[in-house]
Length: 299
Image 1: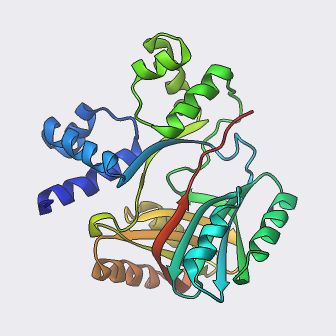
Image 2: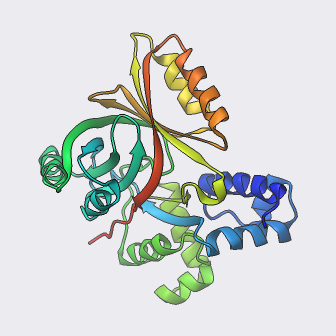
């Protein structure tokens, strides 16, 4: 049985890993003001039990994924089989069954408008899909895997091999990485730090939704007024907002918010609704995350 203290520590530990997936146990313990042994035990439990994955992801711009869109999907049958079929679409990096205005939400990342059109055709052709509403991102305000690439740096074959290994385990030791690529641990450390510093790669924690009842997650579609600066700033500053993007389509902003209780979620939603720049806020609850996969292999 997990104690309330451990549950609280787990939530803070996950947030710390989302900021820096390769933070050492010593760094995590100092940030959380907790014993190293306890932090190590909780980290082992979270990652070993599948509650949390720490993984690397290429910056979308670096791999040519300059077009990113959120799809709201309506269906005429059971959600799980349709969501699993949609998860088979390569361009889909996130697929979630939701409760609300629509039944499934999906995020696609592609390299052109033509590729987006082709992906939309595959989504619409999936049996059970009756409606697709598209919101194309114009700018990502906040998120775990947002564009940071400096537009200059590149990679070689060793870098790409390292990233493939880190996409499987973002906390793999420098020693194990060094063995895999036949370099010294200091040389591997320098390469990984360069990949992170130039924004080519981000290493962060992805949490299984609903694990241990810790997190409730909702998607938000926000329609903005003429003066939206306060709203955008609030989304960036609120620690409960995990992701936010400006977009063109049914909404002006798509966001994800997470909290421990439904009461907390309601309070945060009401605080957003009260902002003068919010004309309308639509929310949907994430019920089951079917796919969250940012893996992309470089040629």
